[in-house]
Image (cartoon, rainbow, N blue to C red; front, side, top):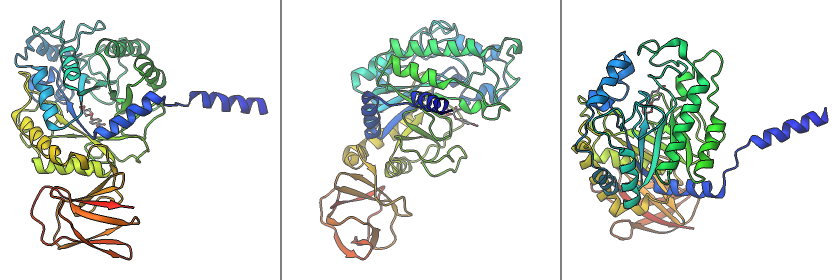
Amino acid sequence: MAVVAMLTVVSLTAQRYEPTPEILKAREEFSDARFGVFIHWGIYSMFAQGEWYLQNAGLNRDEYAKAADAFYPHRFDAKAWVAAVKASGAKYICFTTRHHDSFSMWNTEQSEFNIVDATPFGRDVLKELAEECAKQGIKLHLYYSHADWMRDDYPRGRTARDVTGRDESKINWSEYYAFMNRQIEELLTNYGPIGAIWFDGWWDHDEDATPFDWQLDEQYALVHKLQPSCLVANNHHQVPFEGEDIQIFERDLPGENTHGLSGQDISRLPLETCQTMNGMWGYKVVDQNYKSTETLIRYLVSAAGKGANLLLNVGPQPNGELPAAAVERMKAMGEWLNIYGETIYGTEAGDIKQQQWGCTTRNGDKLYVHIFELEDEALFLPLSCKVTDAKVYVSGKRVKYQKVAQGVVLELGKLPKMTDYIVELTTK
Ligand code: JFZ
């Protein structure tokens, strides 16, 4: 009996994921970056109805696939994309290599349904993007969908059920799993260092009567084996699974859940919230509802205030260009970060959680108080640390403060209206 118990303990421990020193370092660098740009681009961009169009419109897969033969994004310019990302102050790009529509945006050997073999464009955009990222010092993360709405072998989940015309007799999980792993091997072999693989689609089987086994352990181990510094992320909307390196939130900051996709508890892993700049991920022609620069900057600051990165999406157009509205906002965010970046990059969540007036970030003995809106001329900060200095971040002008029982009160006077009025506290 004792032997059996021992064996169980040993095998359980053997399965535990022990992040290597390389991974721990990569996680730290990831957290320090605080800002990345998500790029959703594929043949769905041509329909200009967002990346879920195939399933939402209930299209037949062969009809949908005809878009590939007309995909000729003649204005695609990896250099311009990466330059726009760099100008935004973001430190990494997460690019959709293969979304739920099954179309591969690189020169894959595993399926003809890819940008090189199935389009007149015929260019490996991932290669161009990877080379440009390396040149301009931007890290590259790869989005990869587990769910597939096109292939016969993919076991049907709760989305795109019975609509795209797949052959139900050809479902074959082990074949599909092997296909994915060969693709992952290509992605992690042919495109230089990859910062993270960002999986998505687990939720397609979250309503199965018997829990679906995605065999993630083996796949995660493959990622880590192929590139020991590549982080594993999965947008499953659950607390992180064994083997994952970061925790993702979708469309909400950690601890908030206005979209119903982010109700999970917050783990101790590095955090990332992905968010749209308008209302859709993939290019959607009717969606010009872009968030203002002020809203976007405050969102980035609020993410940092919660110790999370912001992965802000842009959906390139069918012609390969980033929408001007997105580029303009990215530029403005970069200009802001040029001045205030020190209060964001490399920081951790501040001592005071998000408030009506704003939030806080911390770096060493500096506590940054980010004030978005303040009616009063003074601000009470509940703090257990001792404040030894307070100044306006941008000007260095001293801010008067008073020690009170539970913290300090900043005497600010009437604040000018601005995106983020930052007070830097030195603390002990
Ligand atoms: C997922 C993708 O489906 C989406 O297209 C985009 O790539 C985003 C970043 O990630 O978003 C989801 C995931 C799950 C559901 C909805 C959107 N869901 O369970 O309904």
